[in-house]
Image 1 (cartoon, rainbow, N blue to C red):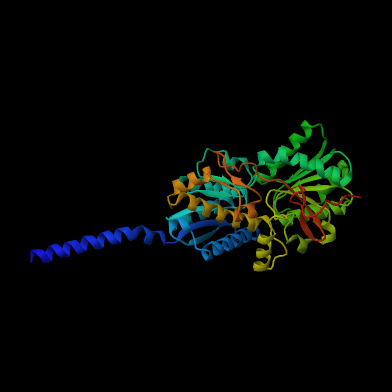
Image 2 (cartoon, rainbow, N blue to C red; image 1 turned 120 degrees about the horizontal axis):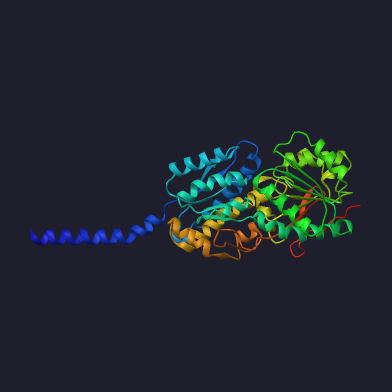
Length: 408
């Protein structure tokens, strides 16, 4: 009887040891939850929906290629919430998604800086590593430890955008930069860039002959265009956020005789290179319009854009899905390096890593690393131009797909 009991005990201990050895591997096979908070309703829904589709594309690729290898092949589960139209909507979405999904290891969103500011107030309290494509300096200026910007902060835009504007003035008109009119929508990121550009232009002795600021979803740009025309600028700088506003301003300027054919028009921000623009304006009206961007397919990211076009039927890949796709891959890389689903370890890995190849570089245009505040180190600066109904990279030359068109 004693021998039988001893044998049973030995078998139980052996079984427990075997289970304990296998347990980490079994635990590692669970799904890893990543959150995306983007607008699927309201004025940002077109952009937000594309971000989500880019993220879904990345998740499918990662899962199909074996998942997170450092976690035993764990698959990524994408959890999506609607950021709505206002910062309050975005904050409420963040609260709901965190309370309903306590195992989230990281996330991203939203497209608009004001919403990203609201979201990260919530995610930081939960110590969730969080990525965003917003450009407002406040996003990485609050002392948060778990926020990561892949876009160029507004404070970095000014010193990077001025040389590109000067280059564009020379390429398009053969003249130095002078007599600039500024038009801007008053979202945090776009107005910060407009203010910075204004100050930098004045510091260089360039005349700012007009400055017009408007609320998003502008119904009529006639009065703005008339004031700009009376100022007689040699270039128009337009800081915008969504395609309808870009259409309203560009159409209104054309109605008073200001077009890319006779006056260089230089834009910053989303919407101006959106496929939706071709539903709002003719390609002839857009021809020659230039756009400053940080994220856009170049001649070095053709394979990614080809997969996106085949998947969605879209005529080109905008920065929206590139952010969604890139953000998921950044989190995937952090998980691989951390070898853990512990949020603190993931965040630490994101602060320490530099990604110099692979899908992240293809989507986000170049090496990706973050400083102590979570701002991207040396983000790229690109100049796009509408040519034959497609916005293409024209500067810098090493990644350009075409040469710049000249104003007549």
